[in-house]
Image 1 (cartoon, rainbow, N blue to C red):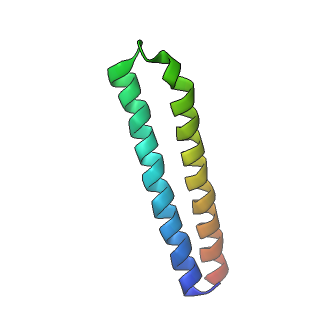
Image 2: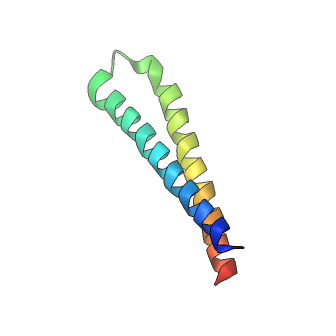
Length: 71
C-alpha cells in the first residue's frame, strides 16, 4: 500500500471519529436535556450513534491492517 493510500485511510479514520463523536454528543444531549419527554427519539439517535461508531471501527481496522502491511 502506498503512503498516499495510508494517508487517505488515516483521513477517513479521523472523519469517522469526528462523526461518531458528534452522534455521541447528540445521544448525550438527549439523555441529559430532553428525556423523558423525547423518549421517541432514543432508538433513532442510538442507531445513528451505533452506525457511526461501527463506521469508525471499520475504518480504524482497515488503517491498522494497512499499517501492518507496510511495516
